[in-house]
Image (cartoon, rainbow, N blue to C red; front, side):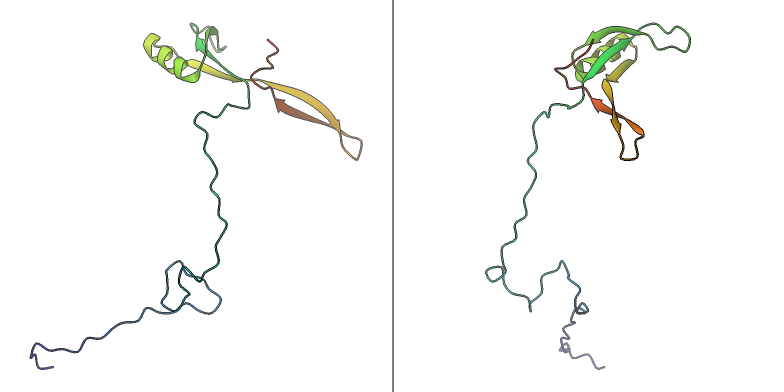
Length: 124
């Protein structure tokens, strides 16, 4: 092709999706935002500090006595346990409390289930 500086501009068309396939890209053939029906998408609200549903307690580790873990003093929160653990150079334990209960299945066999103990319902 001779180059005179005036070359034809060819617009390329993006391939169209097969029928029945939805694309995330807007299309010139689709209806504008004013004509589309409103969708009812809702976002879940995030809580600042959600209260844990399971009773969790935090303890600093005592000096190791072989293979058995030994608990030292209890701290109020996980963040305090992390700071104290770093400051004293010991590990910490996070303990969750559960209560068991038995149910009877339709066949008559017992089914043991565990349920989390809420923070306000400590047994110890």
